[in-house]
Image 1 (spheres, rainbow, N blue to C red):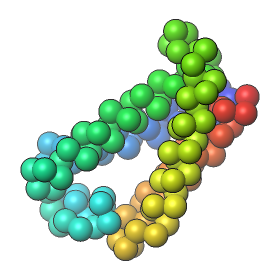
Image 2: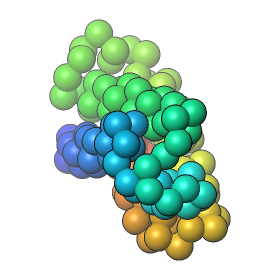
Image 3: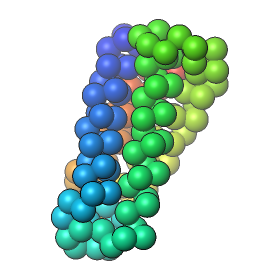
Length: 126
């Protein structure tokens, strides 16, 4: 079960990371992030947020696949603790996406972040 959950987590994280990178490079999807504050492409300074998000997501993916024993054996020991950081981040992400004023953002990201939360909990408990 942990293997399947880690694969789901990695695939979803890949999708979300690609979205963040697209925002960073000017994709016109601003209304789908940051509470829908921006329409079109994010302004210059706001593009730092998707950069940080993409980096965090890559790190979180590494932690989860390491904890599940699928890759990056060097992280295996520390992943036992860090996977709970991932779980907490995903839980906070669920709350944030549930209360966002942007209906489009909520409809798109709440199910995705909830699936990331479930997958990360399964891996953490394995």
